[in-house]
Image 1 (cartoon, helix red, strand yellow):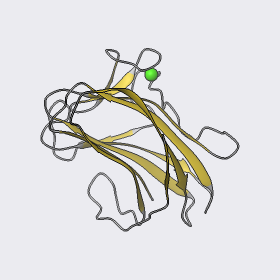
Image 2 (cartoon, rainbow, N blue to C red; image 1 turned 90 degrees about the vertical axis):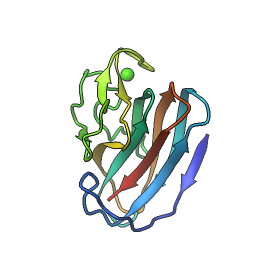
Image 3 (cartoon, rainbow, N blue to C red; image 1 turned 120 degrees about the vertical axis):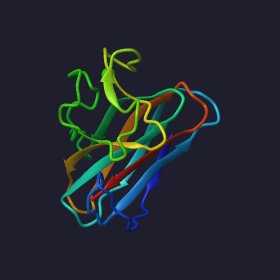
Length: 165
Ligand SMILES: [Ca+2]
């Protein structure tokens, strides 16, 4: 599935997202069934900015989300993220934020990788936590955003993925 996203709206910032001006929502997903590993693909067109941040906001009260193989490439196929497959075994290059001190919050684990040995695992309870990474863009250029997501719980779970700047 490839979805083009061109909507750019102002958003209310919080302690984890900072004072961004633009937010492009890529995905808002609530679960009615468990989610086997699924690839999500989006086209992102940068507004008049030179850096952007991909932001994953995840909550899963009963069990966990799994996230792996996150890539953002420019029109030449150059990868703009680092450690998007979590194969460094930790959150190197990522910024993690848990503003409500939610229990069972995100970490890099080896129980359920999509590829390799590691994935991001997030069972943040009662409130979401935030995983983000900043990357360089050129104004009005197009980027391909891809990631794999799965979940082993079908309720009280949501995933919000956006690009902010
Ligand atoms: Ca991996």
